[in-house]
Image (cartoon, rainbow, N blue to C red; front, top):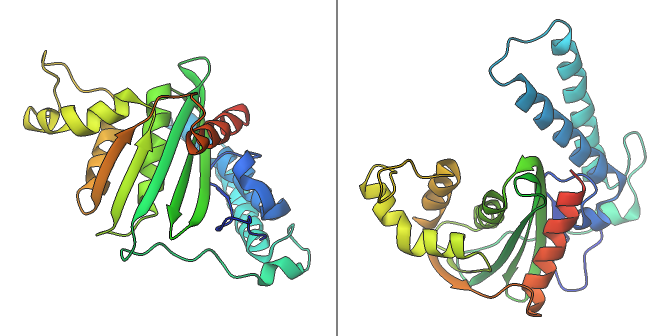
Length: 239
């Protein structure tokens, strides 16, 4: 997998054909598409008995996934010989020894509707781009997902600065979260907090890390914010 000049190779988490799949080649695109199909099937099956014959289809898809993942690791399509690029060093893991900077953004159009998210993770001058999406989501969920997925790549104990253009994410994590938890995940007017799964995931990730949050206004020419917006919109369009 070819690296971008500024550091780690880009990665696509679950948006087939998104911009962040970049230099991964056919194997990565195949993997992302299959993961997307499996997640769509899982969502369709939720709360319903398994239809006749679907187990066979799922088993076949899982087999395709395994072959595609092997091909992605080799740097080419399933059944092809590994390309010379496959011998390149993998992205180095993040450590707790140096500060990490995360930029993140989400997109949903219409809202609710198809969504995408994008993030940049930087440590010691090396950057990794992440993106993904969902066929049915909201803008707030995509904003939160970008932060969640980026924080998941940082080790516990890390010093992390997260930059977002979402007031919902910024105010929720810095002003509202503690009160929601004290009230049993209820708002001030005793209504259930929306997007609890995402807030709980963020809370679990922030706890063992030293996270500082900062807000920037969107679409004002901030380079990293603009790039995250591009990643998020590319992932959204791929849904």
